[in-house]
Length: 162
Image 1 (spheres, rainbow, N blue to C red):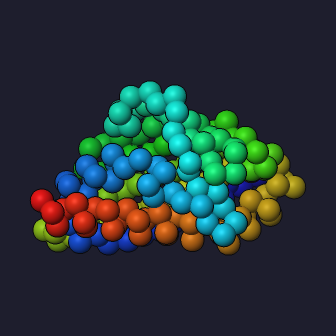
Image 2: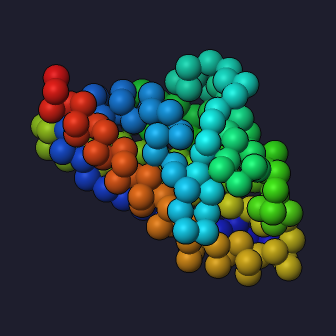
């Protein structure tokens, strides 16, 4: 069975190193908000580490009562980070066994940073695959875009104040 991926990108008008520093330190509830049909992140618990080293992890509690566990699996300062998501509870846990998120940062000008954020979901079965495809392609990419827009606003506001 095939994994299902989506990618969103955005250019942030801010210094490259500062963009990476702020984006990697943002708390998930600040940027991943409830959408029309998808939950947001309500809170974080069981945080292990500062989210800047391989093996750091945390449990995200969602606004619909479900939760997931994220673990940092790759981290290269000022370049990228990747995390694996598993231990899905709730309805999505019946459809997906794991997911992988990756953020890549590229300096495109002295005060302009390009972010490429991808997500890849692994359905639990062939029967789940079309449902996961509809959720990822139809809803999740828009949910990611809004989270990236919130990230952009926070980064640009914080760097403007510096």
